[in-house]
Length: 148
Image 1: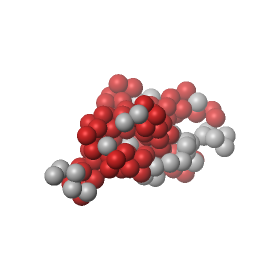
Image 2: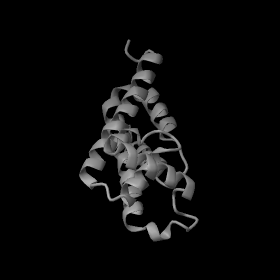
Image 3: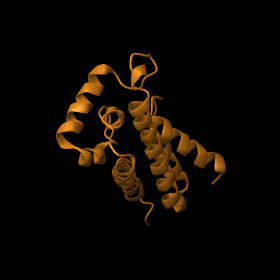
């Protein structure tokens, strides 16, 4: 497998967790099917890229909230308010769900706004995203018969 393939996966996973539209699952799935022997490296790269993308969201919430009315800001007012309310109600464990479509990105921005400590934030987001990618990888691995 080439460095370009790994870089593509990393950028896809990173972008999918930020303001950029995209689905890293599609890229990961294709690479897993083409290179089943690289499963652990692919899962690690997708997890790290996606987690770092969420860290960018935390920074946006923590330091760039005054830009929330800008078009490029990754989360609408409504989604941000919903995520903030959820985070205030359930706290840090909710960050395990940062991978969930629609609420995950606003949740990571809200964590920054609410000044969640960065290290626990990063650890919980990493765990949730790793579990999601591991489940996807297992589904592809066993579903496509790559285990035989």
